[in-house]
Amino acid sequence: MAEHAGRRCCLGWDFSTQQVKVVAVDAELNVFYEDSVHFDRDLQEFGTQGGVHVHEDGLTVTSPVLMWVQALDIILEKMKASGFDFSQVLALSGAGQQHGSVYWKAGASQVLASLSPDLLLHEQLQTSCCLDRGSGANSPHHTGPLQPSRTLLRVPPSGISSWDVMPPGDAGKACFSISDCPVWMDSSTTAQCHQLEATVGGAQALSCLTGSRAYERFTGNQIAKLYQQNPEAYSHTERISLVSSFAASLFLGSHSPIDYSDGSGMNLLRIQDKVWSQACLGACAPHLEEKLGLPVPSCSVVGAISSYFVQRYGFPPGCKVVAFTGDNPASLAGMRLEEGDIAVSLGTSDTLFLWLQEPTPTLEGHIFCNPVDPQHYMALLCFKNGSLMREKIRDELASSSWSEFSKALQSTEIGNCGNLGFYFDVMEITPEIIGRHRFSAENHEVSAFPWDVEIRALIEGQFMAKKIHAEGLGYRVMPKTKILATGGASHNRDILQVLADVFGTPVYVIDTANSACVGSAYRAFHGLAAGTDVPFSEVVKLAPNPRLAAAPTPGASQVYEALLQRYAMLEQRILTQTRGPPE
Ligand SMILES: Nc1ncnc2c1ncn2[C@@H]1O[C@H](COP(=O)(O)OP(=O)(O)O)[C@@H](O)[C@H]1O
Ligand SMILES: O=C(CO)[C@@H](O)[C@H](O)COP(=O)(O)O
Image (cartoon, rainbow, N blue to C red):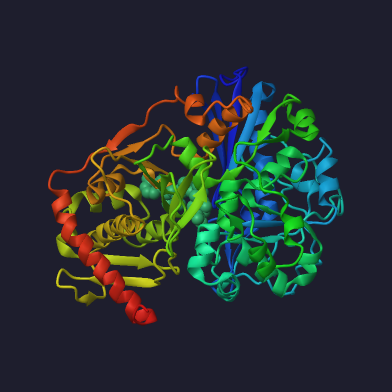
């Protein structure tokens, strides 16, 4: 019997941009099982790159909803095949890439409630093809391959011994009004953003209300676009989920509510009193409140696992489902962030987030409701050109090898002899700049750097931007401050060394880079104590402490002090050149 059989545990899921991941955490808070399904590699029939389809306009970015469902099928079948003892799962929770939205078609709730344990989920939750064909928003005119047919996955992916045979014809019922879901990388809703801000009295007014000015990827603006461009699909939609609450719904067998923390990334939730803003709902689309359902505290138990999972996989019938949340809020839980610490997530996106007592919304960055303490908040900055940008430069200059990439960081000097670079192949969120811009020590724009200088300029530039924009939010590094790093690139010690040097702060990591999964499992344990007022910090106090991964090099802070000022000045120069002087 496998080593992980028979251990009482909670599961933590993460439906992120490039993969679905799971961890199992035992009662002593040790991670004893980890698995993932990578969309590009394991579900190639969907033709995604980095988990998404970029459409012809270069702005619209979507992911197929059935890809997420199939990824869940694959992981569960892998776990079953490996002897994972589902009967020991006391509770589960999860996370989703933030802001993305799923549109459940009328009738979907009946399908969810009556799933047959003899079939895989994706066979029963087929997409409706008629509603989104050629009708504007999110119609499948992306540059990737055409929509996969409905008869997917007849061949078992590697590592899986057998698949249920797909029944002939359209066995499943149509469950989704649109098959391609808008995701966080989308930046096609500028018009809707302007409309929303105008309705509530401007960008700052919207930020005070919802924690953020209008952002293209925020769900309210995405819903407004769908309603305007594809009203038929909108009107056939019985429920709109975030990726997080969509994933929770699969486990629940009914529509799961949206939690306060992920709900804060929609430009729709009033972050102070945690109710939908009627003004914002009205500005986006009609009847929106009924399609969203009531938001709930992030630590809510939203129900027991559906009989589908009990019968097919052997989960206990009382297994609790704790509200799923956004991947960044879940990472805050997984890293057990304390006030004064900074979390830096180096996943598909790079994000930087902090624990906040009081919200002070501004025009840059976001304030979300805190996922583990209902009285508090978190601040977040998101950088779109994260891992995929680093991968591009690695592939162009370092023979597609992270160890070659690391050699460049090791062989170049701290401060890169004054050479600075901005690398934004896609329109950046923080700040809104596109393109690659390189500057010599004399601030002259140059067209190229030697390969190793380019790699250091990329990494130093990414971390200088984080420090400058965090300070813009009012954040100051204190003597006790530590950075907690997570996400795929936190495996790379040379990247973490630059992070420590630029911030002048030690960088710590937890045992797994999957902090969103671990945080979800911790949140599930917290859910088991629901109703007892036990704080989250008490539930996770025995979790392993973060480990030091990189300490600042002596003298580095002095080098970066001057460079940070130059970086900020050059960033402003590029912004002025591209969009005119600041008002
Ligand atoms: N050794 C490494 N050095 C730098 N980046 C890495 C390394 N290993 C993995 N990555 C990056 O991690 C990214 C995936 O991070 P992950 O946190 O799993 O993403 P997500 O949760 O958004 O799917 C990959 O795109 C890859 O570029
Ligand atoms: O848009 C944001 C946060 O506001 C992104 O951070 C998404 O939540 C995607 O997360 P990853 O898949 O990159 O972890």
